[in-house]
Image (tube, rainbow, N blue to C red; front, side, top):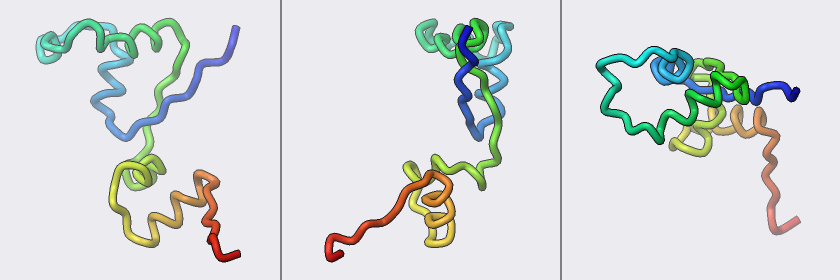
Length: 86
């Protein structure tokens, strides 16, 4: 059997909802088709992990970052800048 695929997120609530099979009153409005992630967690296809929002390299793709964070996340993701003049 293959090892579960790690899925990292910075929202503890979403990780809890995806990992907890109990149906709560607060989330019963969520359509069943969005419970796919919950079934993949239960089937051990993926494994969810938490990362602090300040250390989430995915922010590079979703937020307008300052220069320091931009460079930090770019290096974490192994991305390099290439100039067309070289």
